[in-house]
Amino acid sequence: MKDVDPRMHSAEHILSATLVGMFGMGRPFTTHLEKKKSKADYRFVRTLTPEEAREVERRVNEVIARDLPVSEELLSAEVASSMFDLSRLPEETGTNVRIVRIGTYDACPCAGIHVRSTREIGRFRLISWSHEEGALRLRFRLDQS
Image (tube, rainbow, N blue to C red; front, side, top):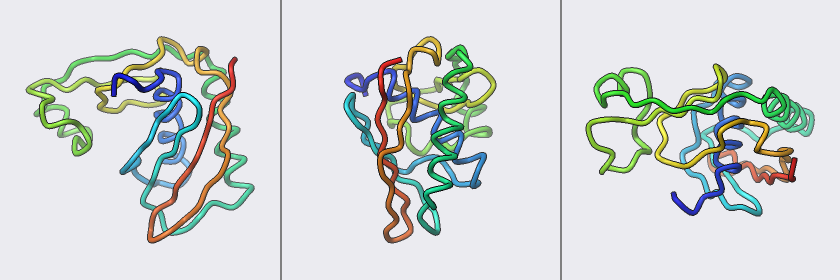
């Protein structure tokens, strides 16, 4: 997780929160986050229409433009498990769980590194998407702000 670009990691959080809000889908079950381009896989029943994909991109960029603070807090594993799905966290997480917050837009357990403010992310671009065997794969990149 330490090699992941903080901009890309923070953008994935915003993307996931946007998809939760638009379609009610859960967080990604796999991600591959790199500086140049990234992908995230979500459990979903179909692919996105081009109009939906453009709306996802628009909403993500709208959140980025808000210049929201990115902060963290530690919760006991017991409290965190009552509020969040902890299944993707490493086993060695321990008795406390780090919650990353992007303003009031998103809160998610995470062990990764992030930007301090969404303005550091740059422009989000959804470059392609596909659906196979119950999984929606979204591929995206970031342009410099």
